[in-house]
Image (tube, one colour):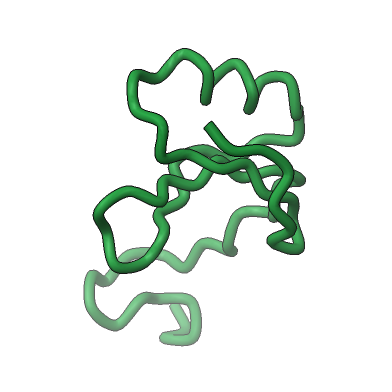
Length: 71
């Protein structure tokens, strides 16, 4: 097998990155950089997911990073 399709560090087969989703739920809590908690193409699913959490440091952003909602 060609080494172009093998990851150098683990010896695993290369897999392409996942397709970008339309919406991201981002946690803006205590981390120095915001962390993506969930990605989806359904805005209502993202809103429900964010609303079901106890914490209130979440944001929903679109694929370009534009802020759509906060909790």
